[in-house]
Image (cartoon, rainbow, N blue to C red; front, side, top):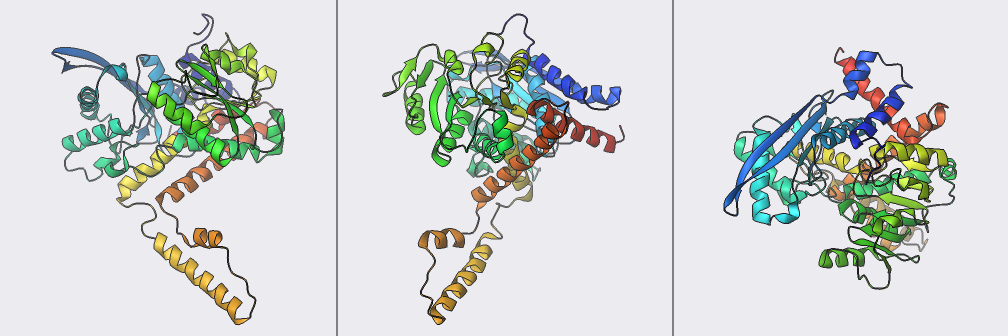
Length: 476
């Protein structure tokens, strides 16, 4: 619950924008053009369900069309309203600019609790919502491309893509109307894990710079760092899984709707997820301490705190008790503007949402490109790579035999080296490169300008400058 004196989510985004814009020499008119939301469409439609007509309210907001198509997820939640959708659309504009994905920012939402409806009912609701947006070109491969968000998944994206195909039967690029689809419906390998994988790559890049790590009052590598995750949905689960399995981090706390569980030795993420799927919560997970007031665990001692669910979970009501020296914003806007100021004063380092959770839109971009090119990544070059590698390995082994050197390549190395890169490897490589490049751009501003106090303002500055350059190129 936010304090009454705290700005709303949308106001928080504007506050962050204004703080960054004040450090730039932008013409007032251009600054206003970048800040404001271009348009928001509100639709109210009826669907006959369970013997009566139910009316639903949906939104699709377009923040900036400095590049097209515009990009942004569709979320299903009872909290969805115009202010939230417009704030999220603004974040998408800045996020895409920061990671150099050629999209403008958009966002959509449906005010609905998806748990109330069965799968057949949700499909009818989704298709009708998609119909209302498609006929106004608010879903279109060249104009507006949605993706999954909170409460939606590849299932809903497949329904939307099929609805678009039914309405645009001659559009050869119909599959590119939406991203986050299942693989068998034009999706791309690695999209489901993308945001969580991006969190991992963001943290790895941060820990490559000892100077940055020291600013967070930490040292060493990622290995052994104690992490608390708030929200074990798609993003939180994959971030926790990858950080624990690949980087030897300890997930010491997991916060969910029904409470939280703690284990200083590290929680087994896969088993916790299985328990969550089976029971609907974390209560009763064996071998861990259960805390009924889950949100109180945000203030537990840890090295890295990763809020991965809703906006505003760290606010003026709890910020003074937050002990984590490093916070990674896996969710959009999990720290309010007021709390951000307090944390900055305490010396807490925040890896901002603008950068941290950009993995989803980055891999969505790869999927969009795949759909437009009509060919799977790696299909043309994978076997050619393998053949070339085989030639090199065979020549090395021949030379060893001819000269009696007696050495051979280890089987593990040989197997990995000979295998050409498939779609998943290429997607992960592209995501890693994107996250590294974006962090470098932020870091250059953060460390290079004395008037830039944190990574968030650095991220906004990089994004605003890139959006401004696009508008100038358009003649504005």
